[in-house]
Image (cartoon, rainbow, N blue to C red; front, side, top):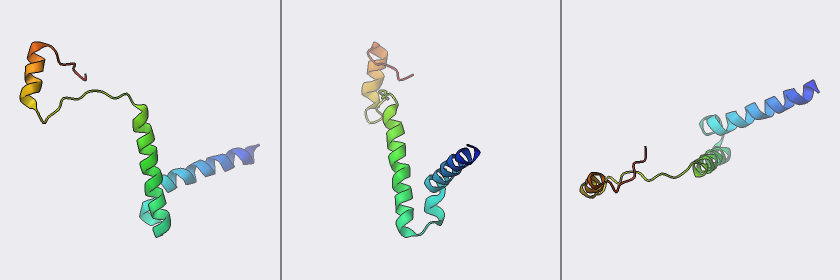
Length: 76
C-alpha cells in the first residue's frame, strides 16, 4: 500500500510540473500541449465562479447617473 501512495504522489507532482513549467523546458509539441492544458484548466475554474456585473468603464457618465439615482447594483 505504501508503494501505491508514493506512486500517486509522484503522478500528482509530475502533472503539476507539466502544467506549471512544461512550456519552459519541454520540446515544442509538448510545450503547446502544456499551455493548452493550463488554459483549459483556467477557463474551467473561471467558469465555476459566479459572474458579477462590473462597472462599465466605457460609459462613466451613465454609470455615475445610475449610482446617483440608486439604480446601480454594486459588485461589492
